[in-house]
Length: 219
Image (cartoon, rainbow, N blue to C red):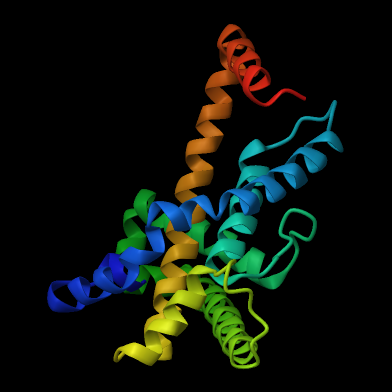
């Protein structure tokens, strides 16, 4: 899964390569992307007014849309089309990963095969990797044709540019994009989910937050 599981010189090389992607200026350029997908989240939630819903599911789709846009420069549309194979494969991988932390019998390879866990994991991982490889290939073609806005570069664009300057492979690029996708959207959605839970259980704080936002941004 990329740099988060690398060590030694390989880790240092990848960190040096990735650091410019997280410069404050680059992060600021992602605000428009976040706002656009946040508006979609509001629209989707408005369609569910009066219903009992699992906010975690909605927030995960929102963060997946954001991270896919910023990492790969594409609009996945997970919030409107959650039944896409890639969206489902990411959800499956996250679920299977959480199972291994709670079930000791899955710590053993034999247990993973007997229960069918390994087959489900391999299938989902193959779909996820296949999707990422396809996006990388298509993005390289767009860059070669000069059809990518240099003022709106995605994380993937910077990795592709780095490929021409240093000795990194397409596999290295795929690993880093996958790391960004997996680690980024799940941690953020978990944080947002708990923040919403806390606000819902403390309406007086929620009101103060609402008033502060209104005071800064208005309607």
